[in-house]
Length: 182
Image 1 (cartoon, helix red, strand yellow):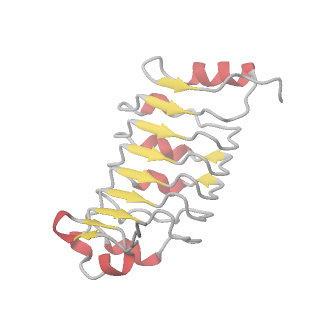
Image 2: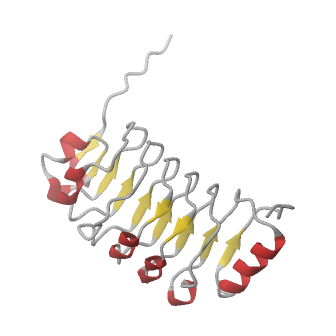
């Protein structure tokens, strides 16, 4: 019989942490913070001290909203908030100027704020499995964007055609098969 001992793994020398309390002991060293499946219901207020954070994984928690100020995360390149209970991508998303990859799939998102257009470095936007009925007309302002994943969202052909027209041809748009829905 094999026993697995599950304990927080911390690679302090490489800047990778998966325990918030341990990461808070040396916040300037934190480059990667993985709080996946931590049963978080709210964005931890203490996280603003991680000014060198490059990757933040808050996936598979119970978050219902992102904070109204994300300006502390000027170095953040990758944000993973998939599998939560978020209902929108707020205006504060525009604070993440260095962000290259946003995975907000499998939430309850119905609205994406137009400030997402301020993410000039964003390459991949993953919104699969949400309830999106509106996307802002800002994708032409995002020069690095090369993929948008909208699979698993119920859309009729008219809405899919609208989205394809909204997005520049250089961007790969992933959609599920259209439905006979309104």
